[in-house]
Length: 106
Image 1 (cartoon, rainbow, N blue to C red):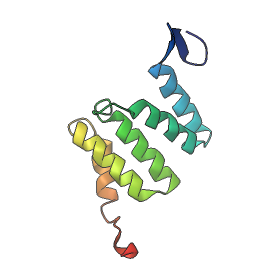
Image 2: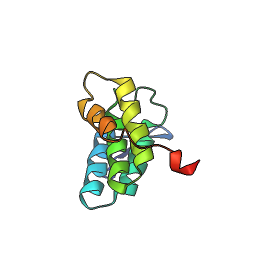
Image 3: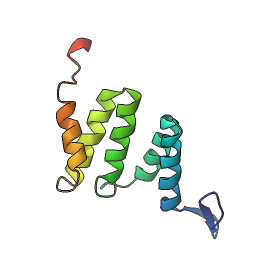
């Protein structure tokens, strides 16, 4: 594997998801939340379960940090749908964001 988290297999590229996760966490630690979101969305693309809800929870936390509470509420909800037993942080976040609605837009 190359140090950028990409390894060549034949003509296609395979991403090391552990590396991507570490990179996303590093980006969050340095305040680059939007770039971390891009990595998490890439990781979630095509993954119906969002890895047992983990990626949904991470996306929810990122959007909440950015102040996009509607997106945060959505992603926390997806995390709960995929794995309600172990996504306790997402359940608490959904409760915290329960008042977020679109009423002011109507």
